[in-house]
Length: 387
Ligand SMILES: Cc1cc2nc3c(=O)[nH]c(=O)nc-3n(C[C@H](O)[C@H](O)[C@H](O)COP(=O)(O)OP(=O)(O)OC[C@H]3O[C@@H](n4cnc5c(N)ncnc54)[C@H](O)[C@@H]3O)c2cc1C
Image 1: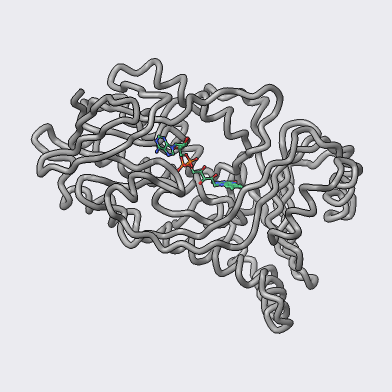
Image 2: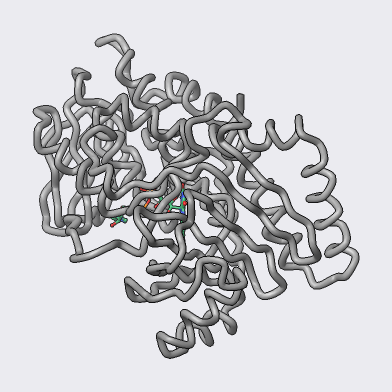
């Protein structure tokens, strides 16, 4: 079977790319290991979508179709250091409707998959996975594990942090384990969160409470592996008590609404997102600590940029040609680099036990908090990326 484009990976980035190309002349194959399903109840895997991602999802016609009852705007955010430092962010003061919107991963992914079913230029191979890849001057052939063969002019790796495409195209990655796990869970709370998000930088990790619709919050607690193992092993009541205690019980008692889940955290960067007729988007191209909530927001901007380039290509253009794809690489060089290293710097600064680092990080927060122009800039940057 011959296609213009093969996308490997049907997570948020890969599916969004296919949807973004719905009006293009490109004939697309999407290969996804497992068909996404909706678990009953709430998904503990939540994301903070920044205004730039929301604008992109609106362009795709997907945002309007999401159930508004499953999305919560973040209007304020309090960030607390471990030695009294504090910075507050406000959407109103930054002239934004919301700093971010909190939503469940499966909620958005299923809506994107629904959009694919209405699309005529996409053939979905799922459940399926690539087994081998042969590179030719004018295209790439992919052999699926089930023996089917696909050929295309260009292959996009949207297959996450451990990308098969990255290996198959020989793209080298610099990767470092944080030696940390992120524990996530949703809770019912006793007092209204008033659309506020909280983040505490503590000496045992970084804890975020994110508002969910109604009297609910979502937790992301990034911490050392030994602490994570202890937290995961606690009985429910003790875990709720410990999480409520982080915020001094400011939202009253917490009750678990989903099981806990944990994710290992790793930094990963590639020297180039291109090799041969392959190109990377999303976590396949860059993995980032979740403390700034930028992972999929970066992924969506990769996809938006690549989709615009591919959709505008004239019919004679070879879309797998390196010179052509360099435009995508150049456009996406700066933002992931800056956010990855800024986030990594913060993660390391707050993981450092040196007392001098403690003084520095809290003094830095106090200085930023007392400089209104800087706080406004940080807010807009955190919400929308470079401006
Ligand atoms: C605890 C935590 C909290 C986070 N919070 C936020 C947040 O608030 N905001 C934010 O922007 N980001 C956040 N992130 C980051 C976000 O989860 C990732 O950036 C995002 O999931 C990456 O999407 P992706 O589509 O690039 O990759 P993935 O989500 O990894 O999707 C890749 C897809 O490819 C499929 N696949 C993989 N290999 C193959 C193969 N060989 N063949 C076929 N299919 C394959 C997989 O099944 C998967 O569906 C968080 C991450 C963590 C761990």
